[in-house]
Length: 330
Ligand code: AMP
Ligand code: MG
Image (cartoon, rainbow, N blue to C red; front, side, top):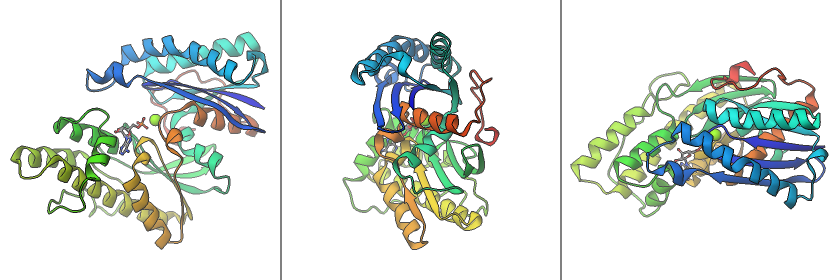
């Protein structure tokens, strides 16, 4: 069965072709980073227009590279939400138009579910229920994944997402956008610092987190000129790692889960990944982190999850786009 995956939820246009016999045949992405760079964040109207420019050429390229004709596609999967409404509309309209023209089934996919489930494509030994830590530019969630149709958000940030805190901190220090990779490489240039930044909400017994105070602490530290951006980056990464590790450990204990999936754009961070892996090893829990091309927004995760949903026979055909779709309402 051949599944086309279409991802346009934010500022990446991506197309993938998944063949459940031969594997992931194609997964390409056009990033709009340069387009939005001058605005210091994503400009929604420009994002939708750019998806429209790049989606069809990417689809044509996929057909050529995979020696496919559109009628050979069996299932069309696309991201229906959450995301920017205009961006979602571009992918949804393309998917529905193609599906109608070819008389093929159309599967609307939840963006976060796709980020999580792609781990099962790479590591089929992952079984339900498992715990997922989804950390991206817009979201920070601890999720109990009971099945592909049933997820429960058991912890979340009450303010900024981790990626947002990293991006805003980088901007304060005049580092380029996105800030996460910049902060990671700066932090790697030193081995220690006397600077300690706060670890918010650690005393709170629950699973919720907070990262906006960290950003304020970065501003206060930076303006004093007592520490270098490398020291601030090092301390910031350490604070974030501590909060994520402690909250995730607590979630593993309370759910009894024996497998953890760490995913989303921030999961590209090697320090956070190795710290979480270290904690999991001590607790005899298996830790899975998708490879980088599957951590950032990508069509492969949509194609794989769409294919699994289609095979299960249960998917929400009536959905078109749902910008505020919650994982609790799959
Ligand atoms: P997403 O929202 O899933 O597209 O991921 C984008 C977010 O991931 C942005 O906030 C980036 O700053 C962040 N990010 C990307 N690479 C890294 C990295 N190596 N370390 C930390 N954060 C990262
Ligand atoms: Mg994403």
